[in-house]
Image (cartoon, rainbow, N blue to C red):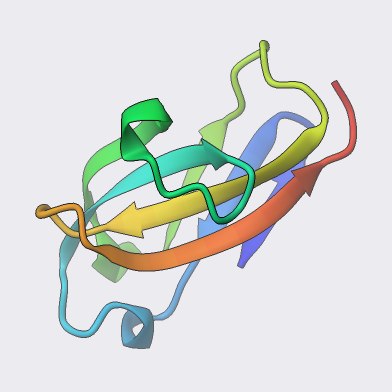
Length: 89
């Protein structure tokens, strides 16, 4: 689940989402379905997934539009991706 409050984004997940992966990287991508991590903004590296959530602030440059938070393991295999919309900007 992704909650957006103003410029703050909170990502919540369940351990079941990751099939045993404990540490992951979190990326912010424009347009859900775009899986080009070269164009992604790295939000968190080596995040401990046992916490169940991660919070970050959106960069000021982000405009209204469709985005996705993507969580990968250290080999950059997709484990979880969740679309969300920014309605201001």
